Structure formats: C-alpha cells, structure tokens
Amino acid sequence: MAIMDVETRKKRILYRAAHRGTKEADVIVGTFFAERTAGFRADQLDDADRVLDLLDVDLMDWIIKKQPVPDALRSPLLDELVAYGRAEG
Image (cartoon, rainbow, N blue to C red):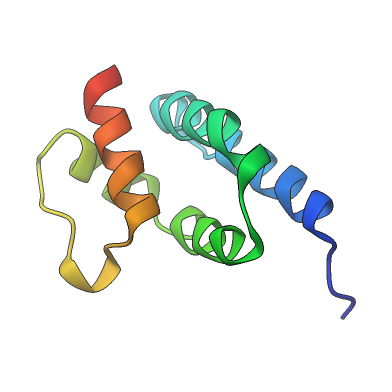
C-alpha cells in the first residue's frame, strides 16, 4: 500500500469528518476539522485518524456530557473536539 502524502491525508480527514453518518456529528465534527486540519502536522493527522475512527454515538455522548471521555482515549485533539462541540451545542 502506498503512503499518502500530507495533503491527500488532509483531504481524506476532511471528507471523513464531514460524512460521519449522523447529521449532528457531520456538523460538529466536520466544522471542527474544517477549521483546523490545514495546519496539522503529520503526528496530528495520525491523531485525527484515530479520533475519526471513534463512533458517532460515543463522540456525541461525550459532547453532551452523557458519558465522560474514557481516559484511555483522551488526547489533546479529542479534548478540543469535545470542548468545541459543547461550546457549539
């Protein structure tokens, strides 16, 4: 498998963020990544992929404070996304 260049990875992340499967997650996650992805470094792209692998139901539960974010999953990027979603909600 070929390694994707940084710009291709950014485009893929933006697509994945805006096409989550639920409208609420599409808006919150999509807007969050649209505002930040352009400045991401390679290590941040790895974290973005990890965050985007999480289920919408879990992300939304954390954003609306239905459940706490599990410590094992926390990262600066995920914490930013959850805080962003809470502020926008």
